[in-house]
Length: 511
Image 1 (tube, rainbow, N blue to C red):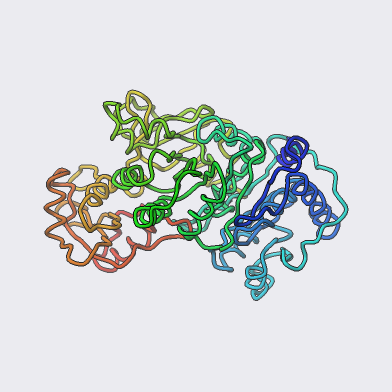
Image 2 (tube, rainbow, N blue to C red):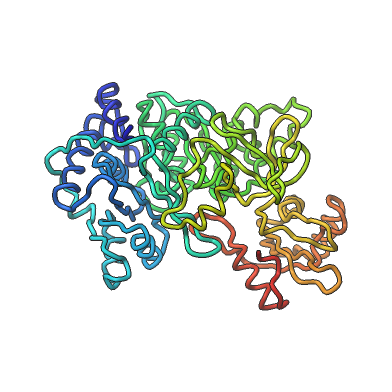
């Protein structure tokens, strides 16, 4: 079933209700959204050679045209290749070339950046700018698509090398949407979905829930994340929910603590995409109340591995409340979750191993990369590369990426546990822990710390000794102005390890 069919249904059911808004103004009703989609699908097919199965890149800041482009691509039966607007044009060109895209839809800024490159850098993709070339054509009939046909080619963030194209089918995205509406954020036609995070990523995947239920999707006027603008839009739209990375949540909480904006219209902030430390979510709940839900997933199982819903985050009466708060919740209902040993043996609750998942929502594989597919999809299981442990109630606590594990004196040290301890120290704003070569112990712990003036290594060491085992505490501290991050806000430990290699020699704990 073609995903674009759901927009046609929404036009019939919800008609004149607002579908897309820019800022506090309605851009299109559901009828207008569906009509524009069919017309622009006709333009793509008749003027630009877009056919069922062809790939179409989208390289733009969040805008109303972005949503129209996604649905026009699907309406024509083609495959959307959304590209993070923060990427360098050469990184975007690699994705266009690797995917074999025939066309790239873009705003003028990103079209001009790509146009400045040599044609061979971006492959065969022609460029079309929304501002100049996005007039509709004759409506195109909806293309028939099978459930397992490719719909979304999602390129991973590439923190450890070239990004890989995750193949997501119409079925994958339909099942992800069912989980979103059932477990993460039940939605009605009176609600709003705010796209404060990039449409090229998780926020875009959540658009389907809004379309299914007839909610309005709200695009901020400014392309860059601004907490003040977010709270203004919350005030403008009832029942507002949105996806946010943990770094965004921290900025929102800091703004709310200082300015005390009205939260009456705020429904849910769904956070994920990186570690949310216990101290941070406790502060978020204290400042903004029980309006948070957490998801854990990967592009390979989009937003769908586990969920920690609002009611679990709000249930302070539970005996293990803080343990659950530090977890990523329990398995979403369309997946099986398993903790496995390096040999592939399923481990009982309480034992640490690799997080593995299987189900119909898991990707088809990596685009044109059978080796990576075979390494990641083994015996029916998606091997996430994350290390975690399940408790007896099925709540999953992540320890780290398997490549981030530090082995000191033959004992495993999970950087996240050390980071959690350091973040509770007054004056510490951010921290990232890596392993460094150690002649006596094999590896020891180094912490990169962003802190207020006056915070010392001696203070941090004493703080750790009060909270974690002595062997886990950092042996080295490096105070930095900021941590290196990729375009999704994730800390680039690969870059931190490179600093370690330059200072200490050896390989650090880079796998």
